[in-house]
Amino acid sequence: MRLDRLSLLQLPTPLHRLERASADLGIDLWIKRDDLTGFALGGNKGRKLEFLMADAISKKATVVVTCGSTQSNFVRQLGAACAVLGIRCVAAVMDTPYEHGIPSGPRLVGENGNVVLDEILGVELHRFPDGTWDSLFALTEELERECEGKCETVYRIPVGGSSGVGAAGFFYAAMELQAQGVDFDQIVVASSSGSTQSGLLLGMMRANTRVIGIACDDEPEIAADYAVVARELAALVGLDRKLDVDDFDVRFDWVGGGYGIVSQASTDAIRYLARTEGVFLDPIYTGKAFAAVIDLARAGLLPGRTLFWHTGGSPALFAPIVG
Ligand SMILES: *Cc1c(COP(=O)(O)O)cnc(C)c1O
Image 1 (cartoon, rainbow, N blue to C red):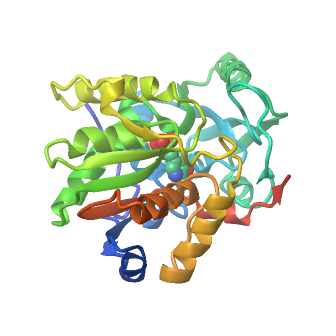
Image 2 (cartoon, helix red, strand yellow; image 1 turned 30 degrees about the vertical axis):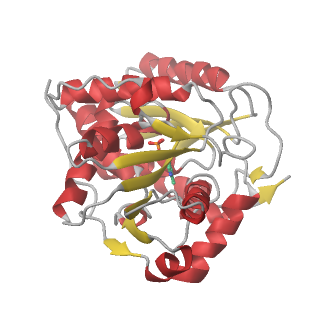
């Protein structure tokens, strides 16, 4: 199978030490700035899109259809990629889709933040009342069929761009990091749909760097999905590694009230990193992941050199929070 790549980002993203946070937390802490990809206000989805959109182009897609939350960082970056390539971008969204029961707690409203950027980019957002992820997937399929009915060539992209092809972005991100010449004992990264962690895990294996995913979804069974993505990726890049659920280090202690629910620890971590380093995080992903860095550092569980992989998301800071 061949793996094409488009150039959308300004790479490599910066890598630097967090001097004040390192001193305060008593660890050797660095940051990989994927909030600064130079593409559509940054974020980890751009790396996946370099591969996904190359695939869409090779399949002669005229429209890309995906789904997610209304404040999705993925939909924003996808919208920009589609704009660059002259392809329609259709997204089915709910403010706070959920897996099991309706979660409670403060959450982002589907106004301002990424929604403003989506409108500017010309994304066709189809907004639905909150429901389960399965109901959102069904609504997305309806939109796909509608587009096909109009003789469009649809390229379907799973939530968060998490397929083997999308994960290739982070396999090569791991190569990019290793070429920057600093070795790490562990990487801490926010994890949700899983192709970021899958790509990094496979890409960092030879370097012997642990990859610790901080879950932003309250679903312990997601690690099984990550393993599927990792196997697809291994086949694409010609690696004979069969990753299993047990190969994934995913921590659920910082997920708070669930996907899309803002936690106090996340809010505190956002303030902490802004006030020590002037770096902005986001309430749904990186705030939770950095809260984990703070707790793990203070518990003495981050020996040697640690990399916090910043996956972006700060436009969501401008979305109102309710509840
Ligand atoms: C999507 C996203 C993540 C999670 O990445 P996955 O590859 O879906 O696990 C983390 N941080 C931010 C800011 C994101 O938008």
